[in-house]
Amino acid sequence: MAIDVVGVTQLNRALEGMVASLNTATRSATAQASHLLEREIKKTLATSSHPRGTPTPSNPGEPPSLVTGTLRRSITVKGPVPLGIGRWEAQVGPTAVYGRVQELGGVTGRGGATELPARPYVHPSFAKLAASGALTSLYHSAWRAAIARH
Image (cartoon, rainbow, N blue to C red; front, side, top):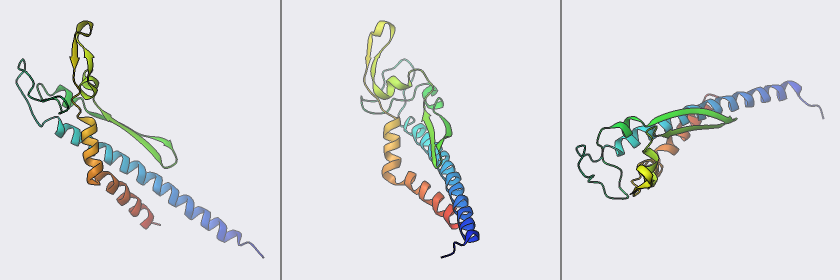
């Protein structure tokens, strides 16, 4: 039985091209998904507001109310960065120093004088997008288009 070296070489090139195309599609989908999450978090942070110096109307477990907009403006996207072939990671979240304690709750203030209840805004935003199928749809569309090109 003879091996068709030309055929094997062509197949390898085609598969390498498809892998490269899928890798690019995954990077693009990760970038789109991270910016979609950024927008959703910012939308979540705009659900209620109150004037500076007045008590927050948001209950523990609800997103923090908008006062100055600093937390909302601090939501940024880093990446995507490669983790290996076909694996990409992006980080979406706040840069404001109090962003984490708002999300998770905890002790804050001078000498830990204040116990702040969790007022999550990142996780509920992600959960909403995941439940809607929007994130999955981004990846499926990108991969279908990459495969169709080959």
